[in-house]
Image: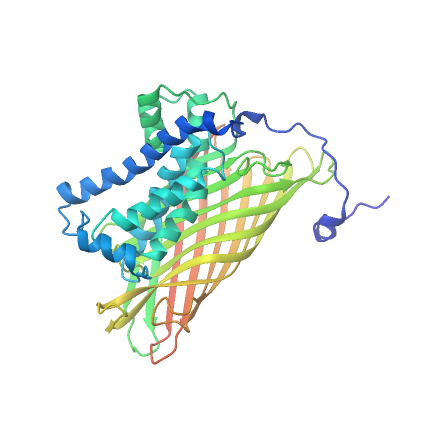
Length: 473
């Protein structure tokens, strides 16, 4: 019988009958089955922890940061409860698109730590984000901040919850585990809660330190010269981790498998490179497989973030943040004892994407603010392709991501704009010892923006080549 080629196998995946022929994950992560009365006290504790997550940053903004808008007043509360919430397009991109999902993860974990499941914990994200926008500060309530906090809490919160449980199972000291998930650390200290026995679920882990050369360029169609240009050295650090077997997943429990890649690099005061790429199965199944071919497929939730170029919390060269629902397929083939191939493909809908527009001229927005830079909010399409080839102690990795966004009408004055991004990476690494490897990588990114009503189009690019040393679990 001829062997079915992998491409044909992927194409007709949904038509193949399936059966479970591998052991499933233990059920430590299933939500507790409780009657209303049994869930009442944990729910009240989770509510208190959610609201406390708002009080602490409010106090920090007021007494440490000394911000004039830190505390709500009667007028701000009245406006936020009687007038429509606004699309706020003037906040710092890096702070907003990372800060709000992280803040939302605290709300989400208040639910998870008190025995609520993945979807049940979403209630506490809604509660925390709505109360913060309404009475957490004196500013007008922001609809995009509310959405970003709630939707971003689901990937960020579940990843941090599972990593905290994993760290506890591995014997990581409590003070260090606290930095992985502060809400879990506080909850454990106050209530005496201890994480469930989850076993060990990390499929792959790598921490790396690198240095290299970067060049970044940003221009608009109405300018003869670049708005920003950089060529020079930089250093970075980061991690890559895979939780759960990517190729053998048959479950309705969200995030029994997820992947996370994060790095931060800089040339102080001149250049920055900040990236987060993640995906996690909401549900998945695996077709029949052999000892050499394994595959999983299912619906996945994604949170991706890029800020590359100019060292500035407001204006980096390339800015993209997106939350998406994709259909995912992950395939692995073992050619021999020394060689293996992996292919991971994601494609789907970006339901909330954000870009940064820099006009190089001051523009007044809908709320009377005069600025050169604004956030754009939109939806669109995305696709991400990863490939890995392993041979003995060497690994070759390549990836290409594509995103396109159309601005949501009425959210900014660029309501007819569109932007697209292409990110490519290629990396070669070689194990020097059992745990340490050396590698060389090249990354290239390009962003194009097209806008109406006289706003100039923009063109952005960022290129990086680096050497790195990595520790592999």
